Image 1 (spheres, rainbow over the protein chains, first blue to last red):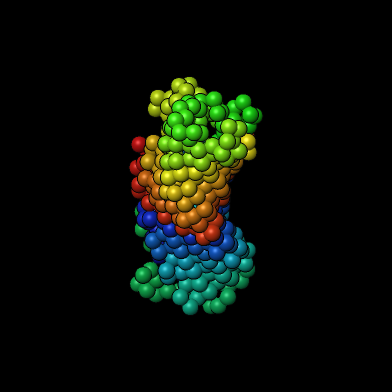
Image 2: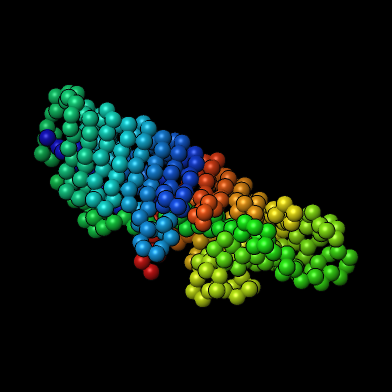
Length: 151
Length: 215
């Protein structure tokens, strides 16, 4: 069967756009929080949620808010889509260093007409593998034919 | 199988989000010392009153909590009396060094190499007793490393080190842009805190951010 987000190619050098009602940045804890109808997009990857927290890792000595992005966490009606596949859950977290996206809280993953319901979805963007755990398969998962899976 | 651009994701996504640096700019917009002594020093005012009370090119200097000298210079200033509660200001230019360790000499010049923030506006109003300063007309804050923040009006409580600005608020930097309708900034024990509101749009160009950050 096509692994969740198996056919997914993400180019993180594409421009990112984030819109929300408000954005709060706290230099002390190196965190920026978008809140209220958050829509974040990069290439074909699109995420919507109620809040999106961005944590910075400050290289020593530098200002905390000029550093690398360490982790993002979206909460509240989280919807992640990559064009072909979508996943919905209560929260999602993207650890940038490890290149891993995890989603939890009643996850519903859909690929074409196949839908899988589970407790947790983990996508390793580097290895290009995804795993859904817990819960039950919503519908018979029709393995995509060879050529048909990735767009 | 997935062809994930190994270079893209594996490398730490280093995005010097413009809002991070902008937060610094906004938070330090008016970072001034708490107690009166260090607050908005009127000492630096060079009185060259020619017509009545009107002052020409007054300079207001002070130091931030971090000891960074700042200076605000206006083309003219019109106090409402000898012990003024309101001073109307003509075009204003201000300067502060962001790395704030205060070795910079008195006139707001930062330490060599330190990031500098310059501020300009068409006019404003200073309320010395309340230590409040409002600026209006093309209010622009610019840092020496390429970040620009423009607002329509800014109202600063110089003693508390807080600032509120109305929009449209537009910020841009090497790594991206930010737009909002309002901005509130404050400094709590030395660290900046900023809230953009009224609908926010942030655009980031990771390539530029990476380049800019690795300079």
